[in-house]
Image 1 (cartoon, rainbow, N blue to C red):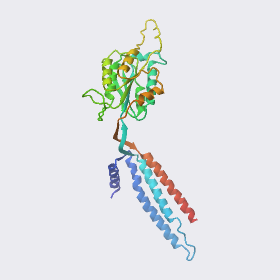
Image 2: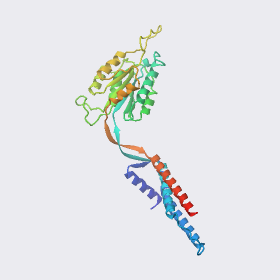
Image 3: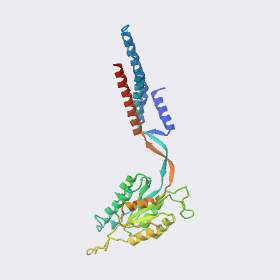
Image 4: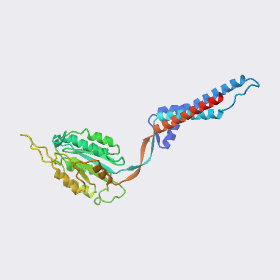
Length: 337
């Protein structure tokens, strides 16, 4: 068998067990291990013949202490080298893993009203901070998605267990003129995966949704898109609560400067959405508030084939085998002294 054929056979065998390689060319190191073993065996046989040829008749025989230890040490050392080659080839094991599809959608208002500085340092920065805190407090089991809206709404991050990716996506959105919170709620509902488990709720003929919640961080201003109450009705029928975080001045609204238009702030719209969907109004959310929101979300666990890079685990095992082999070599050498 040629080396190329041997490598192809190794790749085919590993693929049958769900293992792929990010750097398959480095698997040549594994194929070199048998060559090293043969060369080491030849070298050992040569040394043994030389030693026997010069042994003094009647003299002290060379004790064979540690012969099995040296053999075992060689096996561990070669296994360690082969394991390191496998680790550097970066194996990826695809296997069934439990995946919770319960989802939280963070909806961020980026309308022009968010440019106002009646909230320190600005409404937009305060909203981003709240979004970061909400995502940061989410349990790892939950999927997080991100939606932003101005005059139109768009999905900035689909549901994912990579919470940091959603935080990053929401952190780069910019303000635009216009506000369509009704469209944003519709986009958020569409982003929530449907489930085949038949979860109770939802209108007849509409797909049942996985357990979910929406966090709406907004001013409440609505100048475009579908009516907010229409989207809220759809969410209520799907049993998806909307928890709202009003972004605007606390207390009396300050008098605007001459010849200026005050930034819109309509908290009653947000409060109506929360009431209609059985959500909460979180004026100054703290860690406890987020925990209560997330604890109320159920589970929808499915088994899904997911890739997992396991090279680091193989590397740790290889280093352990190599260390054992070297220790046995040192031990065997001392017994021969």
